[in-house]
Image (cartoon, rainbow over all chains, first blue to last red; front, side, top):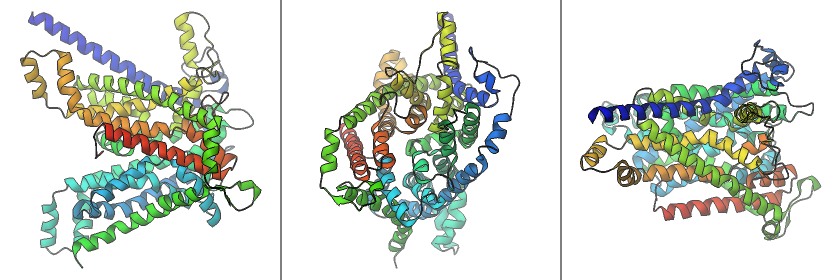
Length: 280
Length: 290
């Protein structure tokens, strides 16, 4: 009886693993296919039946991407915009989250109001911002996207930081203040270094959200400040036909930050996603 | 100066940014939505009252986009929720390799929707795509389904990409909820002779209520904003069968530059999102989401 139950449990366990591995394959296959396509010769991705394993591997599309398609400025723009937005968001969100967590500034209404900003459909802000940026000459400037991405990154980071500050034992900070620190000093020199891992994750999420964004990027930028997502949207709509290898290469490079985040910060991701969602 | 008073200064920068980048533009847009404003004409907006809103409600293309938004959102939500829940339960039942498998399953969540769409353009290709090739091998005859070009299935092909990307999101949130349920609860229920189904119904489900609500709410809000996948995969086609409300609004306001009309449409969408969210929060009696 016990023996039979053990065997049954063992079989269910095996079945669990098999189903999970099946889903892992589904999750990974599109990404693997994307990487393969970027490394295939064109005649191998225009093949029916498809070539499952590229042979030979070629970096030709990446070369073309960086020469003919001039991809470097797009990556540079994405880096500048995502990084500057991240710094801006952290600078304004850290004091705000601290004040809300410690002193309940504005009460529950204020913190909830900040969170509700996340419900806003981006298109509702994109139309007026386009007109306003047009008036003050911010169209196709990096600043337009650096400012616009605060719309979804501020609510996200403020809420994530509030939860970090709430969990922080207030006694440690009070001890520092008894030892002669001012409150600001204790915040900068004692509290922030201790919650640093959390700050890093909030910052990385910010970075990825900005990096992935499409609608604002195609609306506010065209050449000077255009980002990576704009690049492969435009490769796909190229009048000279679809450059699958190059577009795949651009997409592969565009997913690298996300990969880093997923694999190195797995345990923080649940909290981050629950607060932020992913798509704008 | 009291400390609390000083703390108020700390929130000023955030407040200024939110007021400047979100609230002011929204008020400005509300004003624009009450005008006739066609950008290429080069004339100032003319006040027309609620005419743009009336136009929208009489516009069959608006109703079409609204219908398509829900036609995509509802099946996507169901598939994401049930597959995500099942995966969370499966993961919760194993110990070895749980983190590794969870990491692999989560890869799609963080990548740019536009990049995911790019990957699926390759997979869905009728001639050279691996999906049709795979189906051909399975059915032993050539399969040439035009996943994105056929009006009857294009909306489904698009929503499958969202399911691929966002199912792990639901899985992660529910898994976090599941792993916070103490093992002793299950043990004592088992000793009392409860079946697996009873345990699921009377212990797991009630304790998972909050994560379930949070996960569904976030997905509903995001699915109503559906845009990136449409832009990269179909551009609303074929024959407007994948034109979601955000996509329709984007084209009206920012491609054809009927700015007043676009602004009005975006406010209708805003009301739909706020309305559905408050209704959902009321029904589930949930005041705080975090």
